[in-house]
Image (tube, rainbow, N blue to C red):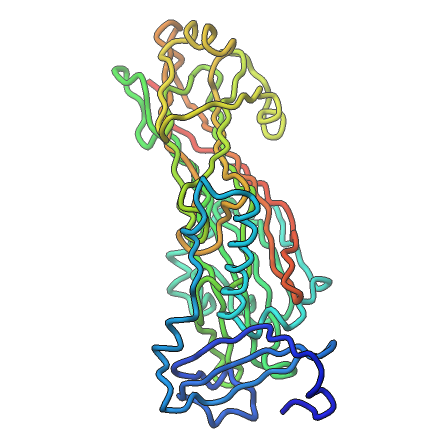
Length: 400
C-alpha cells in the first residue's frame, strides 16, 4: 500500500514483471498466499523510497497475452550498420527489458564494500576437478562450487584455479531473512596445444584457445530446506567485457592459420573482433610469463572471413611481416560482452614447423593468456567494474 501522503507525488515505475506460477520463496512474506498464482510484480520509486507491489492477475486477463508484450526489443536489432546513437537507444531499451525480468535484485543495494578477491598459489590449487565435485553434495547447485558461495552474504571474485573462475554476489531476500539470492557467473579457460604429439612426418599441429561462460544466472537458497536452486538465466547482472584470448608458440615454430569464433547471445548479430598478429624474432628467447607476452610486437590484421592462412617458412614471414609470426590475439570489440552460459570468444590455430629451418625436436609448450573485465550492475542500474582478470596457462606436447 502506497502511503496517502505520497499519492500526489510523481511515481516512477522501476520495473514490472509477470510470473505465471509464483514461487513462495521469492514472494514477500505477507504474500505467501499468492504461491502458485499468476501474479504481477512492480517496483515503484517515490521520492527516495522504493516500494514493492505484488498482486494476482485476474482470470479475465490472459497471462500469455500480457507476457507477449514483455519483450519488444531484441539484440538482433543491433547490426554492423547501427549508428552509435542508435546503439545507445537500443541498449537502453534492452536494459529496461532486463530490468523488468529481474524486478527486485537491481533495487536491493549490493554491498560492494564486502568484496573478496580469492587468489592463491596455482601450484596448490591447480585445476578444479568438476566431474568429481558434481557427485559431492558439498558442491551444489553448480559443479565445483561449494554451497557456502550461495549462503555467505557479499561478493567474491575467484581466480585461484588455472582452468576456471567465477564471480558471485549474495544478498538476503526478503531483506532480513535467512533466504539468499545469488547472482552468479562461472567461466572456463580453454588452452589446448596440438592434441597429438608430432611424429617425424608431421610438420604442423592444431590447437585452440577460448574463454567461455559455463554457468550464469540467479540462484535461490532456501534456509528452511538448506537447498540452493537455479532460478533464472540471463539475470545475474554480471558480464565480461573487453574479453581477449591469445597464444604464443615456442620460438622454433610459427603460426600457419587461424579461425576465429565467438558466440554472444545478448549482443549484436554481427560480432566485431579485435585481432592482432604477434611478431618476434624466430628462434630467439624473449622471456617467460609476463615478459613473454610483453615482448611480442602486435600488429592489427584484416580478415575477409573468420579464417586466414599465413606462410610455411620463416623467410616468407619476414618478407610479409618483418618478423616471425609466433603469436595471435583475438578479442571482442565494444558492445560484444559475454553475459550468459554458452557465450565465448576464441580461435583455432595451426602451428607450423618451418620448411626452411632445421627441425627442433623435443618437448614444446604453447603459452595461453586470457584477459577481461568483470562488471556487475548496481542498485542504481549502473555497470561497475569489479576487477580485471588475467590468467596464463601452458599446454605441452612432443615433437619427434
